[in-house]
Length: 222
Image (cartoon, rainbow, N blue to C red; front, side, top):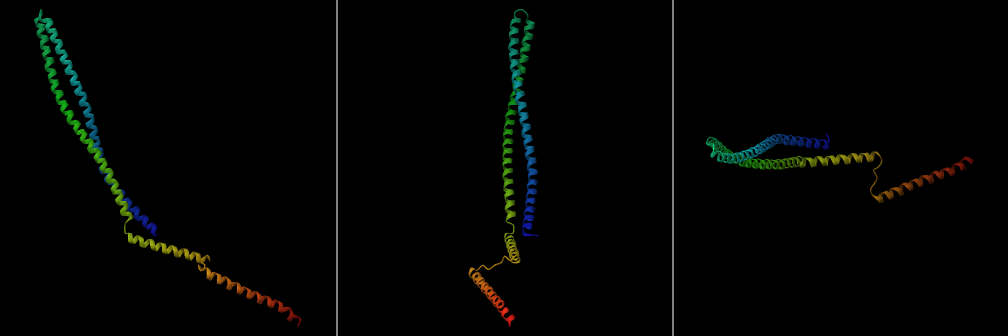
C-alpha cells in the first residue's frame, strides 16, 4: 500500500472514530435538549392557562361585586313596602360578597403560582440556552482535537515514509529519463569538448573516405 493510501486510511479511520464519538455524545445531549425544550414549552402553555384563568377569576369577582351593589339597591327599594323581598335581596347580596371574597383568595393563589411558574420558566430558558452553547463549544473543541490528533499522529514515521516515497519517485523519474535518452551531461564545457571531438572524428573519417575514393581509379588503370 502506498504512503498516500496508508495516510488516507489512517486519517479516515480516525475521522470516522471522531465522528462516531461526536454522534454518541450528540445523541445524549440532543435527547436532553429536546426534553428540556419540551418541559419549557409545557410550562409556557400552563403559564398561559394560569393567566387566562386568573383573568376569568378577576372578571367574575368584579361581576359579583356589581351584583352585590345591585341587590343592595333592590333591598332598599323593597324595604319600605316588602320586607321579605328586601331580606332576600340582602341575602343574595351577601352571597355575592362571599363568593367574590372566595374568588379574590383564589386569584391570590393563582398569582403566586403564576409568579413561581414564571421564575421556573426563566430558569429553564436560561438553562436551555446555556446547554446549547456548551454543546456547540464542546462539539467544536472535540472536532478540533480529533483533527489535530489525526494529523499529528506519529510525525517521525510519517516524515520517514514521505522521504522514502520522494526517493522512490526520483529514482523512477531518473530511470525513465535514461530509458528515453533524456539523460545528458549537465556540464556545458564537457558538452563542448564532446561536440568538438565528435566533429574531429567525423572529419577524419570523411577525409579517409575521400582519399580512398580518389586512389581507386588509378589502381584500375595500372
